[in-house]
Length: 368
Length: 124
Image 1 (cartoon, each protein chain N blue to C red):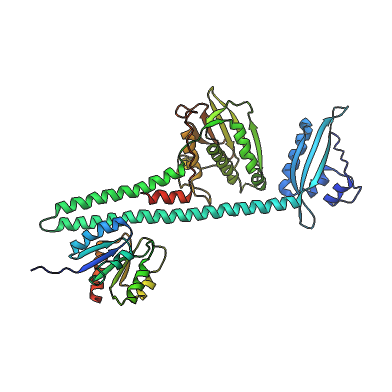
Image 2 (image 1 turned 90 degrees about the horizontal axis):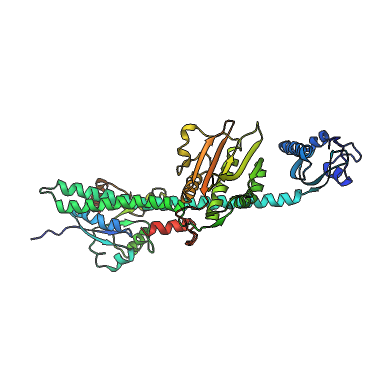
């Protein structure tokens, strides 16, 4: 690697569409690499020069006719007799597979969007309906009350009854809102022994293709010797997923620096574990710090402003803390810390899980 | 000698409407009866006596507009004041075209209701 000497197979010349026998240099390779993926190439070379570790990368080529190829690169590093690193590897053209994957991802995200839009529509209609029913009662009862008091002599008994109903309907409207909030918050926890690092890895595996598509460079710093926590694995995954998505979304317009996303797990004191997600996006306005975690507060065009509010509720239900800080450099850092053995959550009493759905919501408001 | 009050019938599946409207209607000086469904109203002895019908648009089973059509078929010309919970669907023009006197969005004020009732009874 020190000599940067590169030997290619015929097949590789064909993939890159270079004249067979042309001397291959990193610069020449770079002319074919998709401009958006040049950082991957740079990172790969740095890595190879640094520690001769194995390489496992995916990047794109932008061909002269404007078409895009997806390459999968696997290389094994070794130290030769002179102390330099030598790489032997295989490059695979995975364009077809990636196109299939992308259409799958596309279909999946369209489905998710459709589901979200539908449930939002259902929710809005239900809220409007239930609340306006209660408001109708309030207005009618209060009007009746005013008229009963205006007669000579005033109908005190009737007025008292209509006031009672007004109060009841007011409470009913407020209960709709409270239940809505509870529902988004989710309810019962199903606790089990959870390895935060393992859980984080599962979420990363789920989001990797999405992050790559958004040209996010994920830097995991995961502690594989973390103490286990008693927690609801699925709910923690929701929180981690939410933080990762937010970080990725926050960097979507960043073009002047690489979109680095650090995700870290570590012990926090003797009896807590901590997860940190750090992005280099636009950050947030310091005055908005408190609002970040409020329901229906959002800075995204297509967001509902539910994610962080729900995430915080989940973490608090684990007796933990979720907070945000602004980085010294660009971007923001979101962290949560949860106790390994929360006082109020016993391992002996696992409870049924409940997932909030629009259907649930409808039943909740209907049952009021 | 007692003066016969005019009968206003309320058909709405929402209980709080059925509970609150009769008191207001009595304050206005009307007699009031309530029904939780269109069918219940049709089966009652009030169809011929009702001078004005306050009718919810969206109900399970037979809807408000369904009942409006049914009454037309039965040649029961009762003036109708529609009430509805949702503002977004604009069915008011169609309802008025079909002969309804007014269509109020919940929550409505007592004066708006009284005006609609007066208009209905003038029609009558």
